[in-house]
Length: 235
Image (cartoon, rainbow, N blue to C red; front, side, top):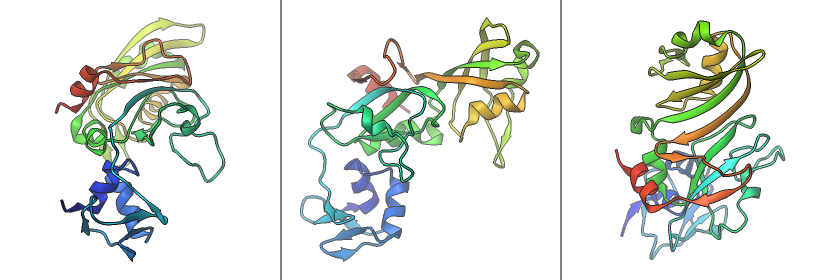
């Protein structure tokens, strides 16, 4: 059945649809030996589709992974600067999966990975509004700015949605906060805290939708349950 090429590449676990479009624009995708163009359709069952000269195939099964990303790893499968990638932590998964959303290199915690493009879109698309909770260790007077953290912020010309924030415990120099947001702009929680005069020492994502980090140790992964997958797919 004919489908948009970027949709096929996403379903094959190559990249998100947006990233797949960039691969096509860069001339890295061919269909039956000819360079593809954005908007092109193909049949994954009958057409030879290649990325960087390697044939792509529809996955035999969809895989959904929860990983506890340690600090110091980048959320990419390959890094041109030679930094440690989360791909090194996925031994035993058996198929190629890619990250759903991102965690910056200095952040830790729950990261979802899959080879199902529809799932990735349902979770990561801004309109989905999947709530994400972070435990944030900060230096500074958290009590004084807690209410301010919950207010919308202007970031990159966009007003963020209201957040939820609470103090889990006080520390010698500040506090540990639980911050919940319904979107995921670049380094959003860090920037929110910095905007309020708080210095972030550690940031750990502990929940995405109904999926919790739980007892996963840094570097460990597990498969999502059917219930977790279904809940994340709901609009």
